[in-house]
Length: 180
Image (cartoon, rainbow, N blue to C red; front, side, top):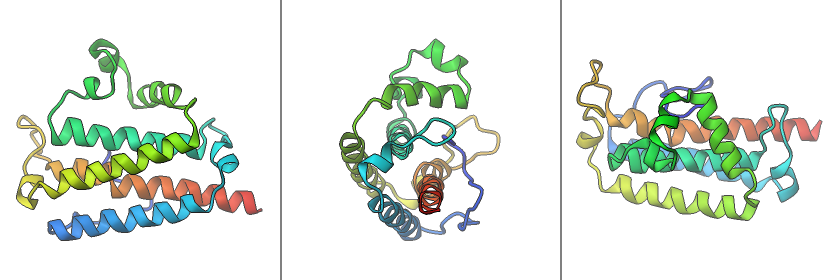
């Protein structure tokens, strides 16, 4: 699972959007595609574990967590460890996989209905927050001390449409395997 990466294996969006309308269109397109994939699943299927021990429900909870991180940590400049409700020392020693495992353990017991409801709420909040920002603001460096001056937009992309696409592909693979 990726967290804040700015790429995925099968990325159909090779370049950053050139304006805010294009960004929002990509987010909406991938959100709709994700919702279509989810709609094909029943609650039992959403709880089936893959070989790595994650269910589709777990993947969706994961999406919600990282959208929340994007909103609160990247758009609102709150410390990521606070957003994730993990003490700073623990957060700083965890690598990406270990962090995702901590979050998995936290959210795995939740019900499908709860995860889906939070996914919807969080997505609505993301759209509201993004509407408040101009494209110019999104193109500003996320971190002032970043030698590469990577724009905030990269974190938005990595935690919205690229992440939706990554997990939609996971769902589609599950659906294909379950039909076999």
